[in-house]
Length: 575
Image (cartoon, rainbow, N blue to C red):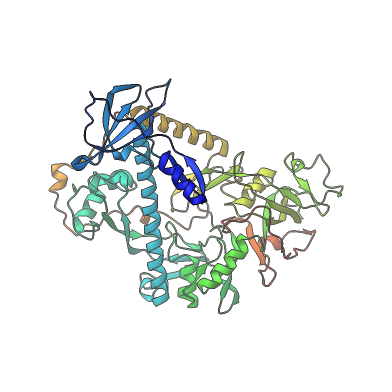
C-alpha cells in the first residue's frame, strides 16, 4: 500500500526516491520563447553559470538546452531574466554537478589537470623504472661484473682512488629543453664546458639523441632520450676499511667510515658503499633500510631481501627503534641541571628554552625548515616540520674546549642533529655547512660534485628569497606576453664543422686535485653509534675522535623504546 502511494505521488509531482526518502525536485524549465532560435533540443535543465567578469553577480541561474543530432556536443545557455539573451557553449564547460565554468576557471582546471598528469606520468615512469631495476637485480644482482669492470681502484695516501673512465648518461628530455637545438641546450644548461667542446662531442657521437647521431641544430622534442658519454672522474674517499658488524641471511650491518656515500650519487659511483661491498666483499643485491649522510660515519643497516628491508624500515618509521649518535661540538656542553658547572651564566640562551631532564639530557623540539634545496641546507624556523632530538654530555676535553655529546633523534629530518646542535650554540667542530667559524673560506663538495662557497645562513636565505620573488614577479608580468620560442643560435660554421676525430677533447675534471683536504671535506665529527629495537640491537666501536676526550662523564647506554614517538618518523634521513 505504501509503495503504491509513493508511485502515485511521483507520477503526479516532481519527486524522486533517494534512500527510501521522497525528495522534491525543482520543476523543469519552461519551453523556449516563440522568438527564440532554440528549436532542436533533447532536454532543458536549470544550471549555475560562473561569471568572473560580473563582480556583483559571479553566479547566475541559467537554463541549459542540450542540442540534438549532429550538434549533440553543444549546449545553449539561456538567461531566464532575459530570454532573448543566449549563447552556445561546448559541453566540456559543464561540470559533474551541472554548473558551468567560466573560461578562466576552465583554463585553470585544464592547467591543473595537465600539471597533475605530468606528476602522474613522472611517478609512473619512476615506478616502471623501479620495477625494471628490481627485476634486473633479482636476475643478475644490482651491480654486475660488467659494471665493476668499467674501471679500477687503488689506495694511495690513505685514500681510495678510482681511475677515470668513460661513462654514458641517459636522460629523458626536460620540458624546458623542447624546441632548443641540442648544441644550444648543452651550452646553456651545462656551462662548465665550452661550446666548442660540446660541438666536438656532437660531431664524434659522444652526444646522441635516441641513440642516433644528430646535427648541432637538431631540435629537442617530447620523448627524446639524450645520451652523453663523458670522461668521468670520481672524488677519492677515505682509505679506512669497511667493518662488517653483522652478516646473516636477512641483513648486512656495516660500520661506515665518513666520506663514503651509501648509494651512487652525483660524482660518486664506484666510490660508494654499495659498489665497495660488491667489489671487495662480494656482497650484492642489497636493499636500503635507512640513510646515512656521506660525511657521517657509523652504523648502517642494509637488507638482503625486500621483505627484510620492509620489516626494518617499518620499525624505524613507527618510532620503535632507538637511534644513538655521537657528535664532537665546540664548547662545554652542560653536564646536568643540578651540576654546579652548568650554572645559568654558562648555559646558552637557547638551552634555557629547552626542557632539561635530571640526568642532564636536553630536549630540543625545534621545527626544521628547508633553506637551500640545491645545497641541502636546513635551519630551525617557524612553519617547519616537527623535529625532536635528545642531547646529553658524554665527555669534555678542556685542552680543545670541545665536548662529545650523545644524541638521540626521535624524528628523522634531514641534517636534524647538525641543525639542532647549531641552534643550541654547540655546532659540530668540523661541520662545513653548520659551523660558521669552520666554514669560512672553506670549499665544500656538494652531492653533485660541484664546489660552492658556503656563506652565513641568514644572508644566503635572504638572497634566495629575493631571487625567488624577483623571478615570480617577472613571470607574472610576462605571463600574458610569453609565447613558446624556438631557440637556435647554431651558426652555419658550426653546422658545417668537420671534426678531425683525433685532437683530445678538453676535460675540466682532469685538472682538479680531488685529494686536497683543505678544499674538500672528508668527514665530520658525527657517528651513528647504535640502532636497537625490542628484538635486535647493533652497536659500533667509538670513533677515534671520541676516544681522545679526557673527561669521560658517562657511558653511552643503548635504550630500547617500545612506545611510538609523538611524531611518526619518516624514513631515517641523513643526520
